Image (cartoon, rainbow, N blue to C red):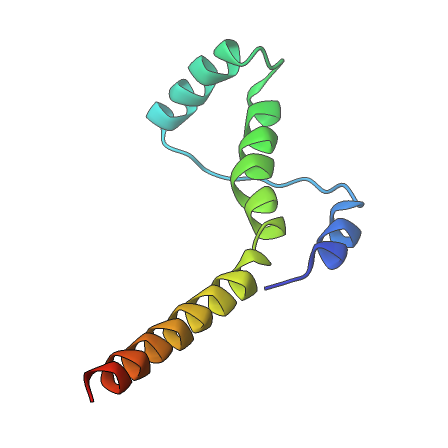
Length: 89
């Protein structure tokens, strides 16, 4: 995964993106756009991309914390097993 600093550097330049979407999806986006009070569909799409792609990418560093917690749990379980075997003898 990219780190947040490189993402912010890439986002600075504007570019035009063209995509094809089924008519039903466009209608759905128009409905959601009105609910969220955006001026047009492109604002809604930018909002969705920020919300679900970029923000989740920025929150990924939690994976290291999760690995540390898993290792801690394994270590604690091992200590518990050692204590159980020592106390039963």
